Length: 125
Image 1 (cartoon, rainbow, N blue to C red):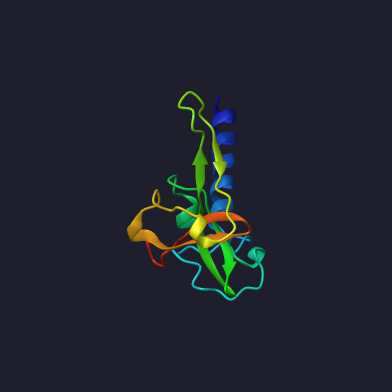
Image 2 (image 1 turned 45 degrees about the horizontal axis):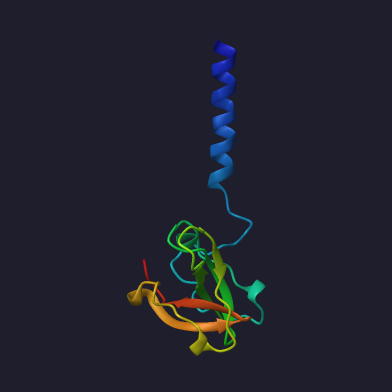
């Protein structure tokens, strides 16, 4: 029994020490990507504070050569008996409807890569 407890303590210590070191993913800890300069979407990383939220599948995109936090918009099946959502498709910004996103957090509603996104206002919580 004492060996089991000792093993659990050691395992717990290893797990904790692994969580306190520097992250090699370099994800910003703040609420915004600080308008980091970018050329492509993969240059951007979504701040941890957004990744922890459950109200939206947040991500980051490169818009006008700066990183922006975005929330992908979805449409829902018209039949109330079907519980399915689909990415909202678009050709231009005016095709997008971001009314379901919190207005105080919305910077713009944009068509990016033929999908609708709510572009998040900087420094929202």
